[in-house]
Length: 378
Ligand code: ADP
Figure 1: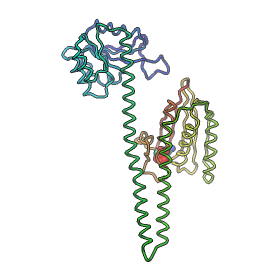
Figure 2 (figure 1 turned 135 degrees about the vertical axis):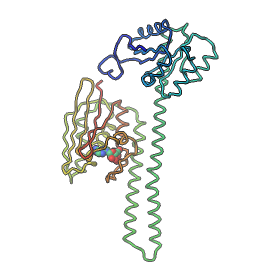
Figure 3 (figure 1 turned 90 degrees about the horizontal axis):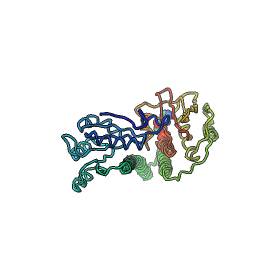
Figure 4 (figure 1 turned 120 degrees about the vertical axis):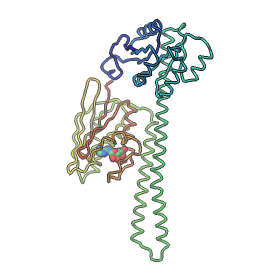
């Protein structure tokens, strides 16, 4: 196997913010040196393509984990010991592979149809191969694959969401049904217990408020995905000031210490970003049992991005929950803080992703948490 990058050696997608972006990572599985040379020449002309070439199928199968990271596989239809369909079959069995384009000397329609039926994204004849045809075919295969992967992950998200949602709505409904049955049986009794009935009503009200919060949260969460991206210049210092004012008003009894560093002006959705900072600061105070609740909002500026962190001295989060807390309707149930619906951070993540930014969490139980938003500079 040999690996090289045309024109831009040692280039990976990971360091794209410091160097020219790698266009594609291609795996070429081809035993004929002349054909390898032609294809690699085309990639040289295209530029910024990282090509890893394998001379035989067995070596390629041994490197399946590396190959999975490629954007596209170019597979010779006839390799020593394997024909194209056998190779395709092996890759299909391995699962989660990038799109495969078959390169072949044959023009037999039956072979072409069989190959495409078995999952190849395109079939290119080596005799008529041009740089343009290769480039077009890879562009198509890669973008279709990206769309299919995105669709699959959205479907999975929707499936998960629907199952958690039905559970979360059913449970207060069940409690409310039981409570109303108890209340009506209490009324039917001769020795009607006013105090107990009052308590049952209180509990009914709590569940109703919870349901109302959940439904409002769900509407907000679902609608936030549909909103048109309405980006303007947003002064984050001003935005955070307004959010803190509203919170400080609510929290008059236990005034928290909130320190805010100067924040940048960014291009974003003012309403969405208000929700982001509101939820993060709210959580920093809500999940905090320290006698002096402290929240620090800092900004670390680098050449290529701002990193804004909301740090608290609260109860913290165990590392195994770092991913879970960003999923809709997920709360950490070992806590006594029942307020909330588990939609806050899911909404934050959704809004951050709409901006094409990212968010991460770092935390230590009983010490505190830090939620950082990374904002690439234009
Ligand atoms: P909610 O606040 O409605 O419970 P979120 O989606 O905002 O839902 O948060 C999900 C869970 O993540 C919370 O229930 C809580 O357990 C945990 N969490 C969020 N922020 C913090 C924080 N700053 N400190 C500790 N735990 C947190």
